[in-house]
Length: 440
Image (spheres, rainbow, N blue to C red):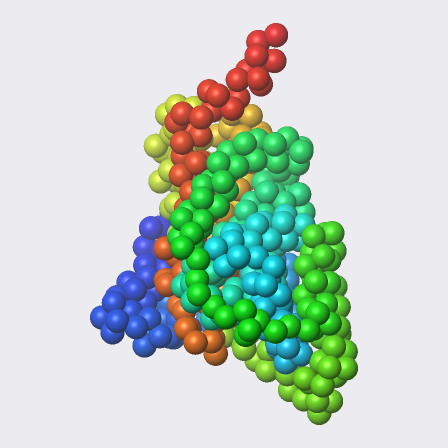
């Protein structure tokens, strides 16, 4: 990247964490300290730090990063997801889908079902945000019907979403990791899967333990119209078949309107207001994503990313240290950029160089890059995933902040632990077959 290392460039991120977390603790309420206001403070600090550029040049630096395909796609997914949520809710789809699910499944398995469905959808769609958009409203409804903690239900969805975000063949992170490290997607998938399968199983066990006592709810209250469930079924099936996320959501919007009109739950004169209301609900998360991208651009311009890269690389002295270094570099950059795909792209070259120097297989370095960035992304309070998940609870009986959800996002936490254990212990077992082939 060619920038001079400058740890002070990370001050905007540190300021956000201190002000946001400190304010939430002080007031005992994170909503007393709106995230967008704190992010704007961080942006102001980043602007003041970029004194070597004129004001117009600083704007150009931010605009360049804002034009990235991943950022534009993410913002459009937010808006499309909001439109679908508004339409399907007005059509009665959320209530009917929740009631149908609770009728078919015992309450103690409903949360596990959310996690497993999230895994399948994210594997098929390759997007964690799209998965959260499809399932978060259902999770909110299940929480309100069963009495299970809202944070637990939303956490199960985020966990499932991060499972596929890390593993899916069509995920941006997988594509970025395999391209930068020079390995086949199939090899990376097999390597990655061996590391994360245990965390996935442990997540199911934890969700079972948290919900094994079940919840009391009246079957009489679980009325549903199967016709109103169709939009969700189409979205879920389309996602599982790997169709484009925009095509799936737009189809869901159209079907929701048709179902709403035909069942009488959505008057014709409220079609656009229902859709518009859903889109409007996504304004906060969209604006926050834009501001975070601007902060990231200036942090990178000021040498903050290079400071992270240099700090880790200077401490690499062995193969295990090199593998851990690759993981820490990518995790550190994800903390600074709040985008796991961008973090992989930024650190890809240096990870490749370290791998070649210490004899690390490309599929291993690709897996480490993806696992560590997905771990951070899944628990990052200013990341798109948790911000959107928290936004999905707006208007419900319990409104959450990202920090409320983090303790219940079991899978990313376990995935990160599995990544560390693999480096220090598991590699000798997982790579046994590969090592034998090399010797032969």
